[in-house]
Length: 199
Image (cartoon, rainbow, N blue to C red; front, side):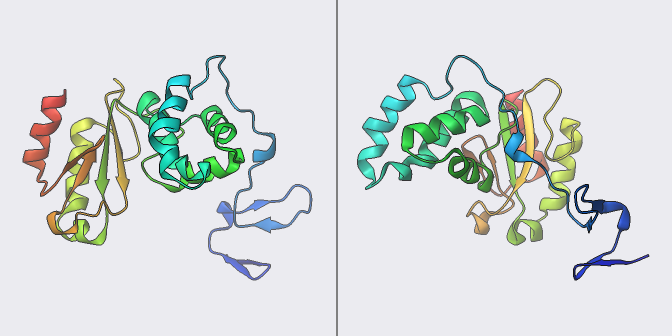
């Protein structure tokens, strides 16, 4: 059965939902982020030390404070293995931005996540070059070794496996980042040795 609504062809009606206010059948899921409750803690994520680092090392490099958004996100991500929503608000207040601007930046780049990840973040490149060099099979073997699916974290909290877009090392694929360390010309055997050394 094919449902046509507002010019959209919905191949699978079960994936569609009905807007409770208008009764219109929609092909997408809406979420009311305007009323989302941000989990909070008393201690700030963007510490005074981080602010000093930004003021001394990064802000002088840029004509506007807002340009330090990515360095600020890196400081928080490195410290907590994620960028909580509260941290986005704190970064926004420090740099004179709207929280949504910081959240948009954090959600755009693969390296940042609002969800806690493992001690070791494995970002396996899935660009066309790496795919042609065996990335798909490699990812399956790494996932099987770790006992997780891509996008998941091991039960012990040590490893998170995430596919990502191009890492800029197309001549040496497949490649991956483990935290900030780039690994090139990966085979399962040589990458397994790296993982075992981290365990």
